[in-house]
Length: 119
Image (cartoon, rainbow, N blue to C red; front, side, top):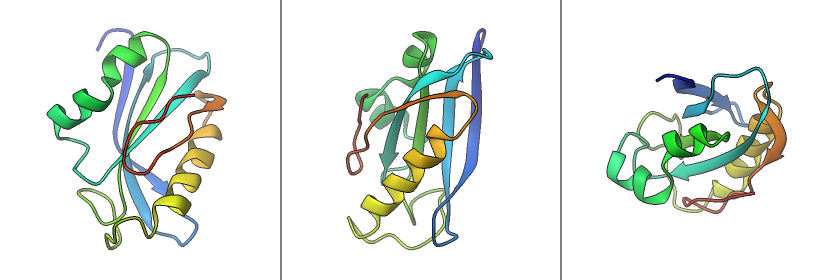
């Protein structure tokens, strides 16, 4: 898309070595962007759910980086899914990972379990 950079199934390592997969939508710019993190147990490629929670293209066009991640054991992510068991540490690790990326302004959204967070 014009003016946007979209990366699909980016590997995000967790502290225990499990790889979770995320799609990243961001402005195609060298300038770091504030970052929103959305974590889903429903499959990040399910457009109706993603659009209901957060339209990543719209937010990216407004200058945000948007990370949409499949929770542990769901869809493209590795591991086993146990509701809520790993959400706190996986959410923390994902936010730390996102904040360390060169495209992130270090202003990264707080994460709520399997829903949208804004910062």
